[in-house]
Length: 206
Image (cartoon, rainbow, N blue to C red; front, side, top):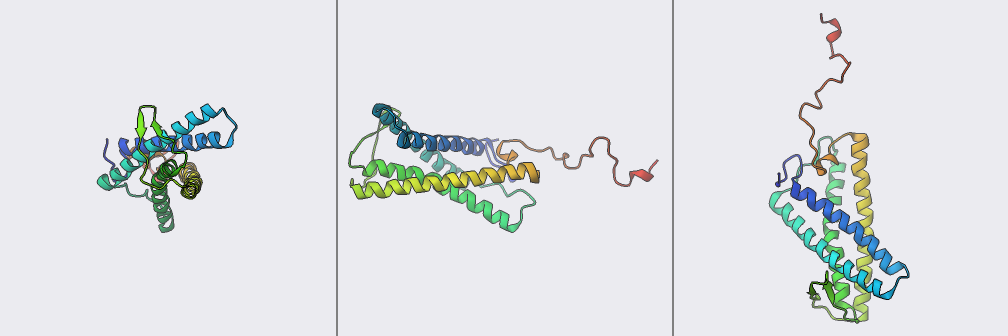
C-alpha cells in the first residue's frame, strides 16, 4: 500500500528511500572520478553535467520524501529498542534527511557562484537556472567546501545507518531492515513452535 502503516512503510516511502540511496552513492562515486582522476576534459565536462543533473533530481526526491513524512507520518520504531537507541535512530534519520537536502543545495550553490558561469544542462534537455548568488571566487570556494564536507558526513551516516540495519537483521532478528524492504512477518511467526520441539509442559501430557 502507498500509505505508511503504524508498523511499516508503504511502497512510496520504500521507493524513495532506495532510489535516493542509490543515486547518492552514485553521485559520490561520480564526484570522486571527475575530481580525483585524470580524464579527458570533454568527458570531465560531461560528468560534471551528469553530476549536477542527478544532484538536482536527488534534491527534488528529498523534498518529496520530507513532504511525504509530514503528510503521512512515520512508522513507530520497532519493539525492543531502548530509549537511547530510539533517540539515536531519530537523530540519524533526521540528519540524513537534512543532508540529502543540504548536499545538493550546496552543489547548486557551487554551480551558481562559479566565476566560470557554466550553465547547468539538465540531462541536455534545458538549462537549469542558477541560484541568485554572487559569482565570486570566495563564494565558490566556500560552497565547494560545504558541499564536500556535507557529502563526507552524509557518507559516514549512510555507513552507520547501513551497519545498524544489518546488525538488527543478523543479530537482533527484528524488522528494522525487512520493513524497509517491504517484507512483513506473519503475525503467528513469533508464536510458532519449531519443528521437532515440544510445547512447554507437554512432557507430562498423554
